[in-house]
Length: 65
Image (cartoon, rainbow, N blue to C red; front, side):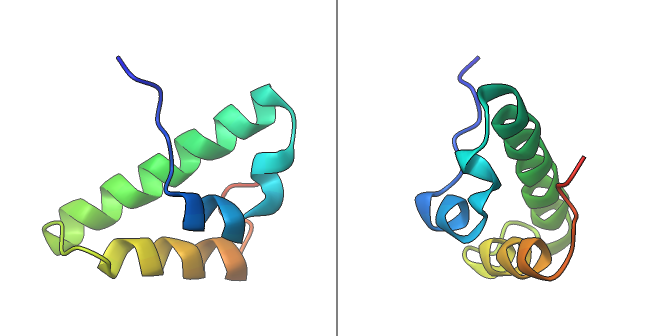
């Protein structure tokens, strides 16, 4: 299985990706969960979830552990 690679613009929005490998992995998993959850909700409307996840990450500590 290929490790989750978030879109570069999402990574750029969320500087936690510049943390250690371990922390970055946890954050990537969180972003993936947020994206997957959103895609299920919206039926995978392209762009909608990327924007929603970006907004979530900017406005909360959704991926801070």
